Length: 123
Image (cartoon, rainbow, N blue to C red):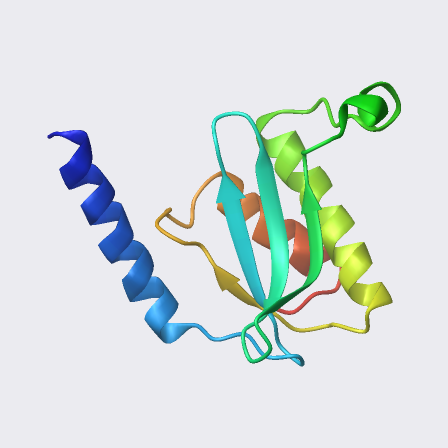
């Protein structure tokens, strides 16, 4: 398969998932973005089109020494899930809906969801 066809398949799969999911202020959408280097998890209110809470592995060069997340894989997913759940509780959010994008509910995505559930967020 060529790259253009693979990208098209991923985009269609993502659109199918997003057609059924909508985040509100009471129950925001958990969006997970994972690249080869960084990962970002956000709580999004689709009514306003605004990010309520976000957590990621992006770190400025000045903060690299003191605030860098050095975990990888499942440990990274658990750390991001705990941070996002804590920040969501501070904002008074207890329910959310998971947007897995074009990825399977498996491995990294599943670990983030389970960690957030264990920290008091209903998904």
